[in-house]
Length: 103
Image (cartoon, rainbow, N blue to C red):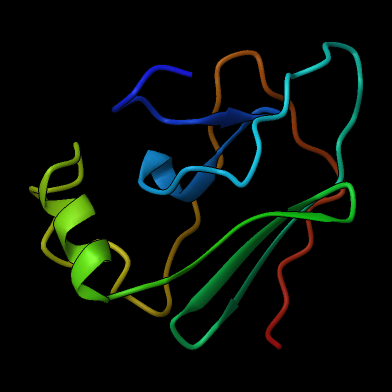
């Protein structure tokens, strides 16, 4: 993984590339992964196949600094809006059985 680049983790850009994963996962093509993103207040956790890959807190000084130096710096409400649309994207990534539910 190159410094300053988003960490690709099993087809998922962790924290929009703003937070490094605990350990990198090499994507295996042709394999389906179970991904879970939990957001409770300001706490965010990314899980892949039952293993927590990254956890971080939104709107902390470190988070604001990371956003300010990222490609999201021109979006003043980035990670602050609590409802709205969700974007799923990826190059060569497929999604299935998507569930979104309030906790």
